[in-house]
Amino acid sequence: MYKERVEKAFAQKGAVLQTSQLRELKIDSRGIRRLVESGVMEKIKTGYYRSLSVDLSEAAIIARLFPEGVLWLNTSLFYYGYSDRTPMEWDLVVSKNVSPSRFEIDYPYVKPFFTRPEVFSFGVTTMLIDGVSMNILDRDRLICECLKYEADMDSETFNKAIQAYLDDPQRNIRNLLDYAKRRRITKRVHDVLGVWL
Image (cartoon, rainbow, N blue to C red; front, side, top):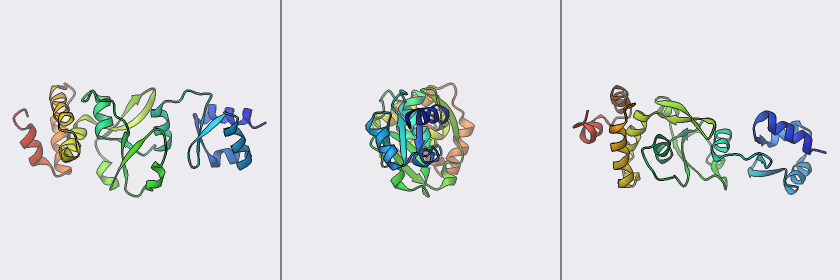
């Protein structure tokens, strides 16, 4: 009874629906439970369900659940090819005003970094990951974040990232220095990269 309605909604709105969208389809909590039990959809987290008839990538789930999030550190390093280590979690930088409970999901595992909104309002671009457009720090901003949070990183990953950035023909030193000034790490940039700049 609900199956056709909900499958049509999944097709129109993407493979993730919120409880409020299901209620708009006149599906009550009992109907939602039946759809989950019958294998039409599964609960991702409180208030969010994904279609089981669509093979949904982790990137698609992350983009749908956290559209304001920006890929950060290890995740960004991997997608730029600055690290060959597949991240075990999705590093996301988000506003400190976002509720931490939003990140309480079993899969995929998300590691949020909470900060002031103005901190990630610059140096953000988009990248197509598994066919999904996602917010990601640009190369130059990413290296600034690596320099700022070096103590939180594995030293091998940090060193490979710096070397990969220096070898990257798409790097933009002017942007790097501008971001370093905004992040108050200009001296650190000169100490670590100065000989190559």
